[in-house]
Image (cartoon, rainbow, N blue to C red; front, side, top):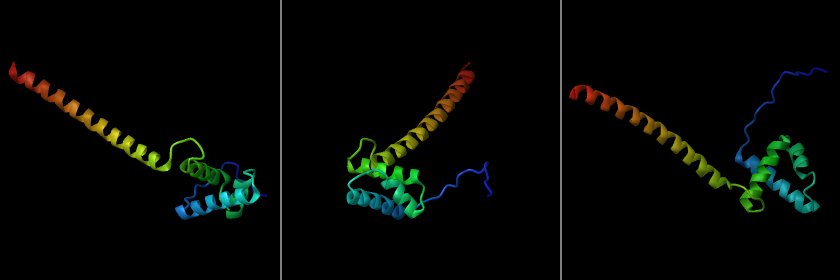
Length: 112
């Protein structure tokens, strides 16, 4: 048996449709069985998707449905956009402060 101990897990991107399908299947299986126990693993194995990926999608779906506390998807996207905008504004402000200090120093030299 060949086992590559030093290898890293591969990262795969799943389409929104694949994610939605997995989440729907988990909720349907929970409804059918009347329990949450083992449903994520069964669906993940059936679809050939990592269990932690499916678990995260289901958790986010529960948050979005209001069944669990946390940041809903829309708010998370808005927060991310605002954080990026804040970062850009801080950078621009820093540049403007440097330019202002430079101009003030130049003005002081000329006025003496």
